[in-house]
Length: 275
Length: 275
Image (cartoon, rainbow over all chains, first blue to last red; front, side, top):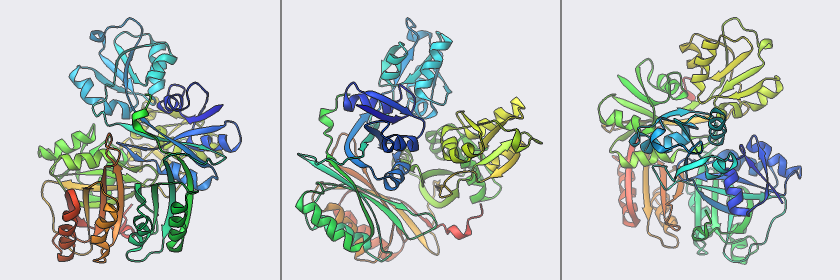
């Protein structure tokens, strides 16, 4: 089993692959496009892509790629993003004057750095900053990255979870060529567009409300250049091979201009989060 | 008039300030937190913050800051993100071997770079890469950044709009201490939470549908650690001082656990986009 992800070895996406699949072979890809290409070309058995973050929002680019490619969502995973303060072995916290990392990671640890009198310096990548620090060998510099990055470069973690807001989660989707028939509680992800009519969304949501189907996500995304047209992302509890869900989707198809089911998959239970 | 934005001089956010306000004084801030602090402390008259991007999604962090601070949305602006290929004066396109920029900008121009045989090298900032290129004086390197960054550092733009996907827009919100009473077509942005009951969202949306009020945005955001609870972001056409909108919000308050109106403001008309 070989799983593709976007980023450098040691990236948070790679950490998510190991948490979700256990010890598998990984295939680092430069871009999300390259991840989808790898799955299409059978260069890997599946991929794990980030779809939304609790602070940074939905990653529309990956919705676009899901719509353009004929792959299936077969699972989901929530990664708690825990930033680590990483140093060369033997360095003491009092020696650190500067932290290097990606601007987003530095921003998420700004309070911690300030209260410890540590200056921030931007680099282009979290895992890359650990690699850089190892090459540098400096004792007054720390890198901020994932536990996985520290382990990969045999560096020392002085503190884990230094982010100011602990509610920092990224939701990942597992995608592959073949769909699955999930057992137990399932989720289904769909994308649709509606006719530009008053109350169109209200009607569309009635197909779920009338059948007591719970929604776990709804999001409108404006179609640029078409001021009144939107893509809608909806996740609901149920699977396309369940009678009630199937009827709801048939009903929705009566209103929708375009409707795509991206996959039905087992719902991730946060309490079983191994991270 | 002095307007705060997040980023370095020459950042896309600064470009948005000039497009929206004309020639005003700007106040660059290190973080979104610092932008809100600047408005609260009267270090500026207002601020312009990005709230969503057509490829990268909603910026939840700025919704959090809107909820934590008692400021008002008074306007919106859509910036078409147009990446420029920027060089030292006199350099010809055939000389360029390498492009430097923020990874996101490089990713958005990947097709262009590949078709021109230009390698990509990551830096931490778009405007910063122009500054760096000027200091370097290299003739075989280009930076990718905004038109504003090129002008600021007196560098030359060889090509504008080199992004692969032209549908790249960022929506900005103007925020200040005092609310406005918008004339003409207005939009209102609200945030609310609902009781955890089947069909709760459907009921909540009925307050708009029953009054023929058009929604221009709806988004659910899971509250982490509370698997069935959500924040909802809704934008609708209308202003809180209009009778119909006021009644709809009164009605919504009957269902909502929490309801905050973040501001009513003139709707931005894309066709008047000065960029």
